[in-house]
Length: 104
Image 1 (cartoon, rainbow, N blue to C red):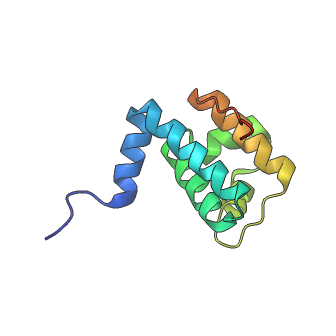
Image 2: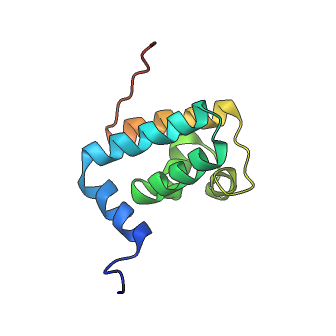
């Protein structure tokens, strides 16, 4: 049985239409980084960026070339902490998602 829509396309549509989905996906991406699942976090952030503001607009916000951002969140990328946090801050601001870390 064929799928009606490719998985990535479904994610992109949900990111654009559902604020609660945007918040959950960004939170999961950050959680992946914090728990040492770097590849998962990079992949999720890459999808999040593509489904929300895009690499070109993000590039202007964080003053990092879009090609560098794409490499940073690619399979072999290794984002520096300051770049990663700048990207997360810009994504929160641009997509209206505010995450607050709470100590358990």
